[in-house]
Amino acid sequence: MLMEIRLSGHSAYRTEYHLVWISKYRRRILNPGLRGYLRKLFPKILRSLPGCEIIEYNIQIDHIHMVMIISPKYKVSEVISRIKAQTASGLRKKFSWLSKVYWKENIVWSPGYFVSTIGLDEKAILKYVRWQNIQDLGQAKLELF
Image 1 (cartoon, rainbow, N blue to C red):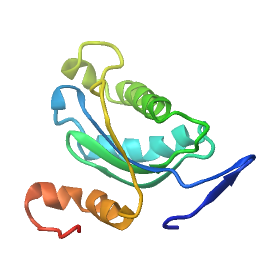
Image 2 (image 1 turned 90 degrees about the horizontal axis):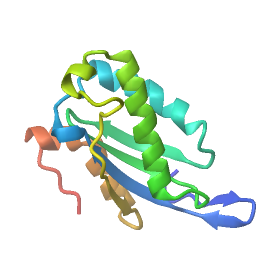
Image 3 (image 1 turned 120 degrees about the vertical axis):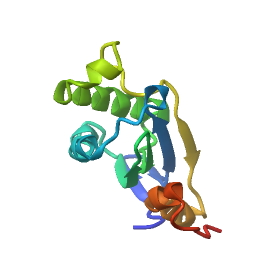
Image 4 (image 1 turned 180 degrees about the vertical axis):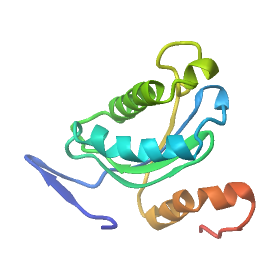
């Protein structure tokens, strides 16, 4: 599926993005239970975003890396905002202990995010996202380029 051209009503596109967002205050909340729940939430959220697809993601203890195809009919900021809002709401409902970590309602994520477009270096970015946890632990030195 690498570098696939997509078609919509009046356009052809290949818009892939590397997204990263962090937990509020960089708290180390994304334990295995939350990770499993997020894996279930992502497909549900994407059902309301036709033309968007998650290619790869990696959930770390305090941040998430995601490679996504986002249809040009959406703003990147709109998609990331919806994902963050819906996951925060779902996590707060499912895991009541988060209210002890974050006292404000529906807060889980820091307000900002990182985004970059993926072009010819897609394989390197996918490799980076896939192996981020090993890299973070210092267990492997990856040559990405």
